[in-house]
Length: 124
Length: 130
Image 1 (cartoon, rainbow over the protein chains, first blue to last red):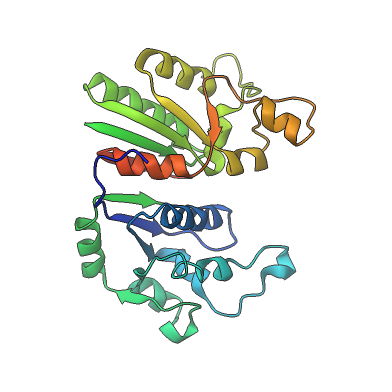
Image 2 (tube, rainbow over the protein chains, first blue to last red):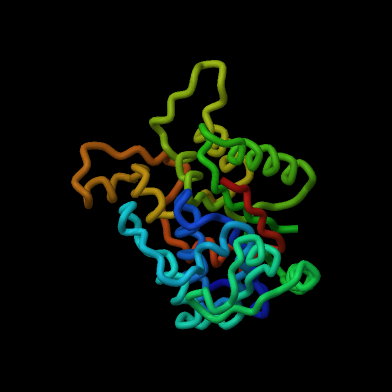
């Protein structure tokens, strides 16, 4: 693949609720594709997107595929840095043990650092 | 500086695509380059040639096509997001046994790898939300 800069650090910010629209799923698809193309990707779940990470979802009742299963694949695709916004988790009273994959919980200050240290950010 | 844009919004439901178009024009006017515009999620409707807005409204596929003609910008529609929403080129229409295709000729259907490449190669990547 053509490249001017191999060492880019991409931060993908997800903020959509899991089933209110289809952007959440397409955003995760992008993350997996970027990882499959061996990009240096970090993923931040913020706002309503933290709901995507809840364990034991049963969206079959609304004829949807379980998004947490796809999100769980992030580490399998080599995305090791998955972050969740502390404030958003607090808003929904979620703890790391309620989530479908291990995440690094980050404060607003740490999110600012993540943004500052990324060469590109994509917001979904 | 070289930019790429990502358009996520359906042009007839959100301001996303029109804002992206205005931003693109401003960039080019300011002497910047645009490598690629990637249409994803509802943004794929920007490439639907059957789009028929009222006569006094802008027709987005033509607007993007004009910009491409002037500035040689790559206009890529995510194939998975596109065909799911009924935006098909001739070969996809045949493959899926549809009676017609509707992808505007200025656009091409391709995979998410095109977005990955745009992110990798451009100095800036700007997303226009849904």
